[in-house]
Length: 95
Image (cartoon, rainbow, N blue to C red; front, side, top):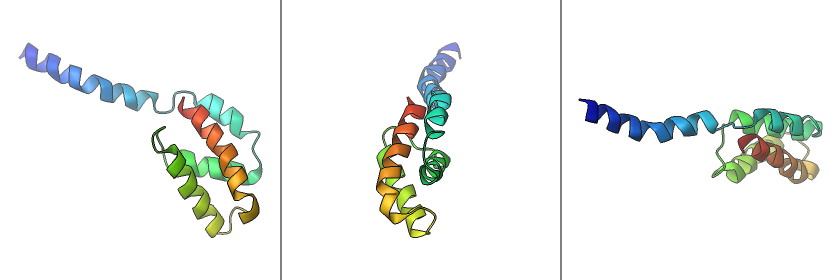
């Protein structure tokens, strides 16, 4: 019984650690986002709400920014620039 419990804990520990470190430095990301333009803040909020990982961050930023531009919520002309800035803040939040 003890051996089974120890194996279960060993297998679950990495998963639990990933869940708790997904947003390792939310304060840094939010502080960065405070300096974004209004459009950048919208993109940042959408990206954070999508709960990305470092592995899918780029795709999440592109998807969220494209959606906001298509919905007319973010200006098309500045969408890429704002998405890049918001992405840096989201990356800071994840690290």
